[in-house]
Length: 192
Image: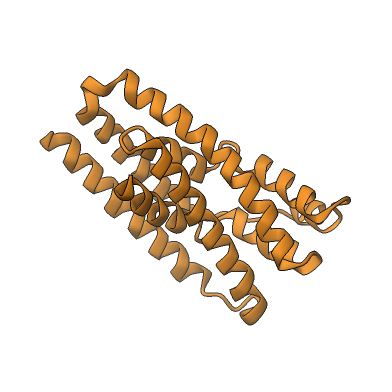
């Protein structure tokens, strides 16, 4: 369990760097209390990642005799996540307007927005991928911690530095980390 927790925390934290979710978190924090934003995104993340690890664990169990192949496919997926990260992720003007004009309780508004934004996002797919060969519980807790930590960091850094974040450097770091994880998974698959 601990390996799954640490690995998924690190991978998902890196996956979130420069992601649309961080931009949403910063935008919501300009409208609502940071505490409410963190609570809303934590609830949404926990739910989405619970579904993700369920899917990943089912795939891993169904194909447990083919773990080497699963690792190779997971490694290739991580290389794809690297390309996705390198391409960058932006919050469109329309999405930013929706965030700014959301009505209702802050936690509910943030939670629903994050839940919908994370469906099919690279962090959801990375969580599914991790859960195919790591324990579901550790992956769930770790992926939730990683995402919440990255988004909370975005709120704090955004409040302190504004728009002066070195977006290109963050994107390159996250891309490099995905490449390393991808190559390691492929290596594990080939040598299994």
